Length: 472
Image 1 (cartoon, rainbow, N blue to C red):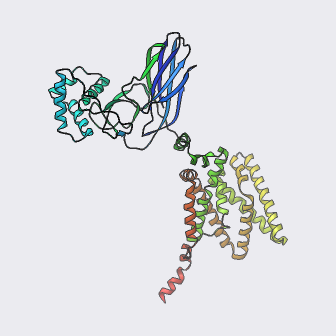
Image 2: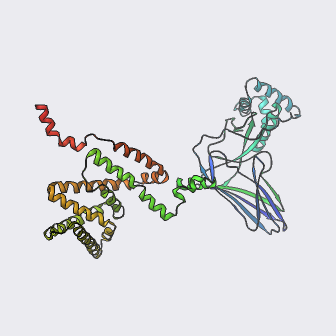
Image 3: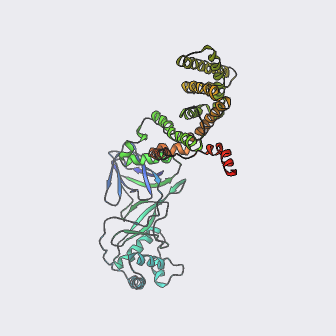
């Protein structure tokens, strides 16, 4: 957050103030800009190089304070060394006074012989002028110039002798918690194609990494009419912000159509729904791998992932405990129904009624003993629990308790792994921001759909057969 504060005393009549404001350059993206003033009219103009904010009021009394504020997001780019822009005319060679004229011409001739182009010429000139062991010519040109802005103007004055277009550039260094910052003059020279930046004190090429280019050219920073005692201060503060929010605001500022048709255009409530739904394909891919490649046995195809979704609300420990308890109690009641010799549909309906009653009883009991987590048992999918109990009882009758417990344990293990996967914050962020990643999940699922090899558990299953074959 960069803020410029302009304070002045009005003369009791109309007041108008023109203030140079930054053109956000490469390295930053402006995601918010505010002009804070009371009763002032505002207009913003551009002259091709700079932007100018103009405040005006018909009548102003006493102290006046105006603010300009811009919110910037840094981009991962290399430091700026050159910038485009209109090609300026070649400057006229100044009529240097003596003895300065002779010194400048001698220095320019010497630098010209040791350079190849405008950039190398400017760098060599600045290196000589700022040398720690300057020669007599450099000492004459540096004499009496202490102010940084005056020094930049002196260098531009010297470069005009070689007919090299140059201009001052004013930058603000973005450092955290700067309260009384100021603009720093920099130097740009034109090589016929682009503006090249140089540090006027060292001759190093480019701008600092944390520099915001405020404006370029020799025009004044501010023009004030109808006021006096003008004071300008700059403050900088930084804070961390969600990059997704930064990207969203950046896209909206650019009028991006992609943002209008993204999930971020949905209401917040619907966004939260899709944050969960978009994780389901990842959970189902986990089931595909565990069933088709490893050979884990489960009750149903998608039952474990639906149980994993319920674990999101109950948390893992309570979810496993509640699921195991309901299935165990439901299984005992299901065995009792065997004596009644019911048909399939009435039997399933009866199990469903018992599951709901069990869930209600567990909720009441856990609430009475102060375990509020037990109330979340209502989040379990009732139909899935009913079908789990039914399939487990059938497996118990047809294949024995070992097979039924194996499938039940496999289902619970897959549900736990699915919970750990779909609650991963990084995956949730990536899938929601880039939902096209689900196409990769689809592609891998299609590839596994053609897999006809052995499952890992089958290798263990045929272990004894292979051992006998080796002995034979």
